[in-house]
Length: 446
Image 1 (spheres, rainbow, N blue to C red):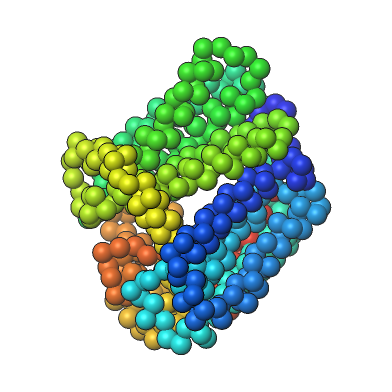
Image 2: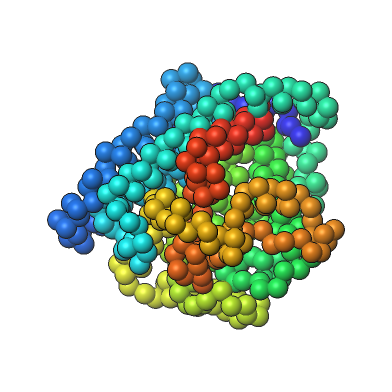
């Protein structure tokens, strides 16, 4: 599907790009983090981990290199696969996360599981850098584009004007909302855990994305239409209302800022001229969404206490209790807790370092936890729905992974492609596996 006037993805430089909001968002996060560190008077005791900083700098150079290259060529696009992967995940998780580790601003119980951290943490950053180089190489090699060129003639093409998609967009919103509600009632969505695996659970989990697709179509229509009718304002009101409602339903720290991404994408690719005022406003809104989302998600999980399933009424009652707490608690306490939770959520370096330090030692036990060769096993089983293959083995359980590597199975610790490739194929699997991912990204982006 395409909209008239936006067939070609925009390729413009800083003056009209989304680089501004990205820099504003992470600049505010970084300055806030440094300020809080200074305020809490911890900076004087943080020098013991400063050995990480040179390796963090190396990783930052590697991760930001494609963004700099695309900007230099006048093709910077926040939603370019390499740029989006760098700025939304790899840079914050491992570069900002590395700075957090250097300042000793997180105190995970599993830090002691990293044997010889002065060797394994830098080695982890080297693996991250090599993996991203593999991803970049895979993207720029002609393999993915070649496959895309072979398939493109068979893909139907149609130009739809904004006034032709309102009904379809709302149909997807209604269907997606129903699937999200069904997923919530089944224990598949939200801060709850479904113990028993149903035949249609995987299908429902996949189809909840229909709501996002419908929202994206409607936002594109909003930003490209020239008519300001009643349906125009009703659509905006409904789409904006869905963002906090999903945050309340999911109890997720990231749901609020994730809800802004379709808006940013639709605005950027609607053909509108991007002004610095827009980028500044979006940067501020994104920063507030990040902080509010982390504050709500962390508080909600603390109040609920566990992933045990409860009735829908009790679940929403806990959402109301979360809002009441945030409104009544001392703002300085809420802000401090939010910044600490944000640091804990962003920092993924030590989680991968655990695997780097222990994967060879724990490899003999992975089969008992259902983790052995999980990439290939999950790849071939995921394409067959469980309602067609009732006896299909379960895909790798993140809690089993957490139990084996972190000695705590009641939580799902961060899982990264770098750690999974290392566990499955050894060090050589990281650049090769990420290169194949680069082929795929180029294929779908071509």
